[in-house]
Structures are given as structure tokens and as C-alpha cells.
Amino acid sequence: MGTRKLTLQMPLGRSKGTTLTPGRMAQVPFPVFTPSLGLGFSISEVARWEQKTRKLSKAFRSPYLACYSLGAAILLLNILRSHCFTQAMLSQPKMESLDNPMAYRVGLALLGVGSTFVLSSFFALGFTGTFLGDYFGILKEARVTTFPFNILDNPMYWGSTANYLGWAVMHASPTGLLLTVVVALIYRVAILYEEPFTAQIYQQKASSSHKRS
Image 1 (cartoon, rainbow, N blue to C red):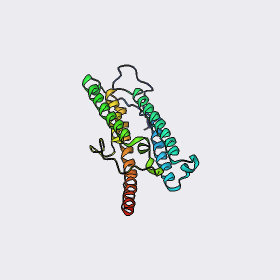
Image 2: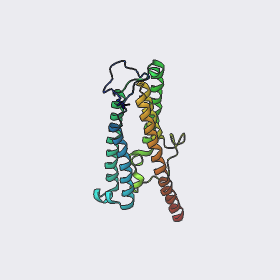
Image 3: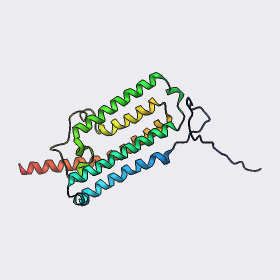
Image 4: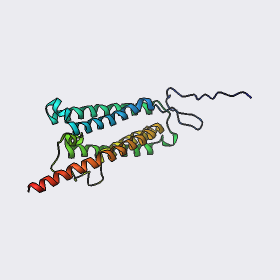
């Protein structure tokens, strides 16, 4: 008996009104999306390297200027990631069960909540607090505990996740839902990576202030 070669036909695009149906395999364009996630880890490594060596601060002759430069790179990365996320959704079929006005309104509400958390976090932390200023030795007097940090920990990360989820629901995109899960997992790893460091440096700062007093 001969063997049969199994070939999966992957759609290259999506025509208007296309829905995701059983038996149709949709290609998830991770090769387009995942490099922007990998760059996020690279920036975290750069921040750790700066905290240990102060090389960036020395190169820019200022920890603030170095932090602003890294923050600009993070902003560009976020723009790239959002663009890749949207392109990944638009290139794939829609999920019929989500393609309705009620789901669209739910997605819009998620986008509103997520944007509220992201923007309020930025205003509470400031530019340097948002973009890894801790690693450059730029610290606040104490850890921020006002809104939205009194509602949940790491509101910037979870607000961003809510934005991606809302955007995916608004587009009735199963690809968007899957990529949102990937983003949430990446953020979870980042929290496990960053949270102990942040707690440690503010504990050291509090101890130093107590000794001086």
C-alpha cells in the first residue's frame, strides 16, 4: 500500500465576510508577530545590564537621557507589536459567534477599561517610572499605591492585555484571541522577572532612609 501525502491549504488572505468554519485551517502568522515579543525580552535584558554596569548612563552621560532613549525604543516596539497584531487578525477568518453587535460592544468596553488602566498608570508613574527608570537608579520617594495600583497590581500590563482582548473581540478574531493569550503569558513572565527587583530596590531605599533618620 502506498502512502498519501497530506497537504494543508492555508489561506493567504481573507475576503470580506469570511467566517471561521469547521474543517478550515487558519494559519496564525506567528513569524510576523513573535519578533516584537522577543524584542521585549531583549529590552528587559538591556535594562538589567544597565542596572549592573551603568554603561548606558555613562554613554549618554545621564541616567535620565538613557532612560528616555530606552523608553522611546519601547514605545516604537509597542507600535510595531500593535501593528503586527492587527495585521495578523485582518489576514485571518472571523469567528462567526463573535461577529455581532453585542460582542462588538463588549470588546469596546474592554478597550475602554484597558485604556483607562494604561493611561492612569502612566500618569501615576511618569515617563521614567513607566519605562524602567528603576534600573537606571531613578526612583520615586516610595512605590506608587494610588489609582490604579490600589485596584490591581501591574495595571499597565493587564490594561494592555485588556486592550488586545477588546480589539480581538471587536474584530471577531480567533487569531486575535490566541495572540492575546500569548501577550498575557509574556506579561506574566515579565512580572515574575521584574517584581522581585522592584520590591528589593524600594526596600533598600526605605532601609537607607530609615538609617539616615
